[in-house]
Image (tube, rainbow, N blue to C red; front, side, top):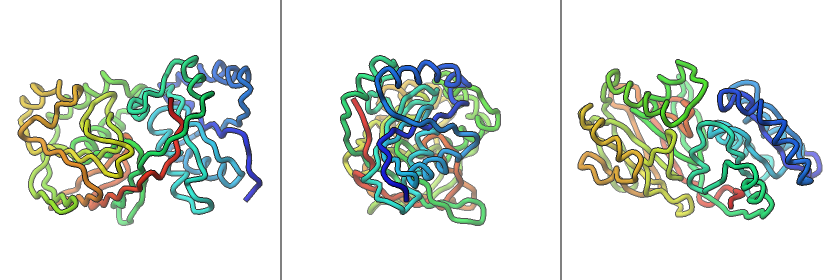
Length: 310
């Protein structure tokens, strides 16, 4: 382990935002210099590269980290923190400079996209803690572990993410994701699942399952409006089978926090969740990244992450 490095570790995903970050970065770099902020920049080159780079940064003595990109870049940095055992995560601090397109985590914390406002926030150095989710899941014939800081999705959510990833979109904006959600309706078959959450359970066919620490996903949807990132619990939302017309007529509920008012929707706050597919494969995504399938077990890590916020 090297001696502590007082500089900020800046992780940049040049492909984020359809390549927009590559164009914006020189201006951002100049702003860092103008503000006298000491930093070193590292560029991701492939999927999961951010995990490796972050862990290398920790080994090199960095303790303060900035993710420049979208939710995927943040998730890789988070997993760089938690998939290492060199130092306690309590010694590390993370924040986001949201220049990507999938910027849902920052919405809960009102982290600004405007550079002037962001640097003002950064200068205030306000640090709080939030919960982190850990999920054990199936990845082929192996078991995997992944951490998340925003929202995990199973069944329909993961189906949409997988469908979109196969088409390699340049941008993951709100309009694109909603288009994918509606388009996939006509390709999706309801899987049967078993859900065990604290002392309750559900077994039967399912439309979608969301497990949230923060509130927003899918380009601004509020499927877990009851999430609180500091209460030590997951916000669980699952939707029983609903007709395609029913989904279309209730699309507005995805965005105004009223999804729990629908009779096919169950919402609760819980500390542990187990989801199993029944005679079928049920896929899993976390923070917008498709990672594997059920069986999956979710555990909450209370106040486990230091974040810099307004």
